[in-house]
Length: 116
Length: 113
Image 1 (cartoon, rainbow over the protein chains, first blue to last red):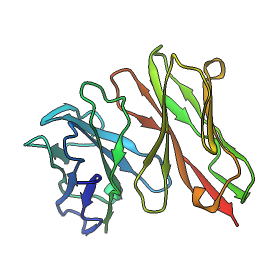
Image 2 (cartoon, rainbow over the protein chains, first blue to last red):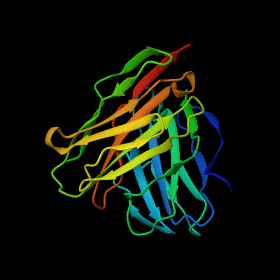
Image 3 (tube, rainbow over the protein chains, first blue to last red):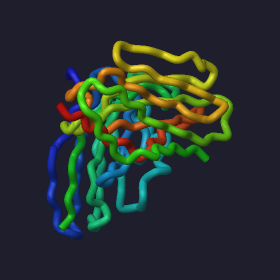
């Protein structure tokens, strides 16, 4: 596609529900990142894939957060038993450069998650 | 540890004024990369510039310019003759070698017609 696509754009969940957020990176981009952006804050790193390999998941805040990219293209970020503190915008980004996470990133518009 | 500080939370200027957004960073690495991204109301972050730690040359791109000074650990961004379309949140970010980007908290710029 022309850009990074994320769905849904908005998600409202009741506390305790599981949610799944989808990211379609730019076609051919090998590197994929997930960031969490709380209101009024900068994005914070969650996890990083190179193709299907999850190279860094140091930013995932708890074991309730899980990300996958089984075929090296589309990625899903899953949050189990959502809590109110999970409310944030979840941004996905991709890069066509392999081997380093220091390159220019292309971001999607994000999924705004509200946990009630 | 890597850290980025954007001390200006919000700035408001009148159209055609020049405005400088400050960015101060901390890193112990000698090889690192600095970035600026723009986040318009639509939400997606738009890449503006990437600089590596060995290149201190200032850069100009149209109305945008960047001043990188290792001596003060700063990477400031100036918009000349600001326009309403420049209104957005601007993020400075730092990436140490092999590590993902760390963002500052952002500066919200409002340009008033």
